[in-house]
Image 1 (cartoon, each protein chain N blue to C red):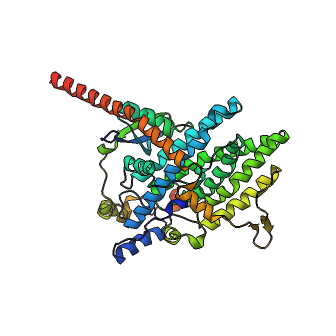
Image 2: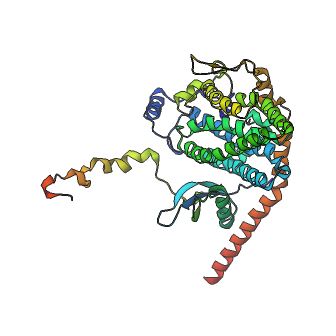
Image 3: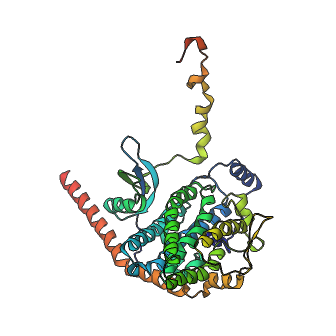
Length: 331
Length: 95
């Protein structure tokens, strides 16, 4: 999904040829780039943008699922959902921390999210209407995220790659708990199975859009591949996801909302129908049904927490002043 | 909105006794106590550690990557510092 983060990114740089060639040689030799290493401005900017938007996606991603914590159908499901949402918050923090090593501050990134300047994954602008959506999100949305994130563990930028290793270890639980919810519903009463089918119908196409625009329409893919920020193109990852997911859906006894979806023996993969790119761009640009609410909720949380941040800073100042005063008195 | 930024702390975790603390990331916190709590919540949700260090990021002095060659290259050219530099006949046995 995080390749969506590159939409509109400026990847051009102004360094001289020799510098760029030296940098590219390090990348080609699979050397990791670390925070204070010399790097082209375009590389730094691309990473700040991609990691920042990835972090924002994790933070905003807590909202659609948080919506169901108080209404989870059992204590087991509630505990799992709480843990999952807490993980998403944690993932956001690992990622902000990786972005901060590139010289951007947490405050700047927060400001960009709240002002709408920074984007986050379009998937979180769809509403979670029923409990089955929590199953579908774990199975499909986290499944798509894993597909995207596993190659990012080998990203050329060290802090991002290390953050992604932690994230991937934790995502597996997310996907499995989601699939288990889907299995329970699909094997339940006809009404429960209907809920599961309805959730799959609504989340399937948005999940495919998480991989970003078609390779032919993706402006910055080439440079990101060359810098080994990305290892696979959007379409390659999307195909892998479809191939992995369709048999899982069939196991559930559910159908996919795509009449063109069928196995292609020659390519040893599934063919699937055309994605509605108009919808994709509409949601990315703020026209999804939940865009406004998601940002409003984040802004309210930030503003309502202002007094806590101020009080904590004042408390730390007071303690520091007291320590210094008692040190002076002792001298 | 607070005008001054909340300080950054680097986090080091010891996975278990017998191993060294290892850098794992950073957190923002106004004091050391809250930094430890935040580090616990962010970095040890699945038993990753039994001990946490937090250090103000501003307190860390790092070597300059630009000086990597003069700092570390001399170690590479001194092959005689490694045991494999010395030829010992097989007959002598393991040494």
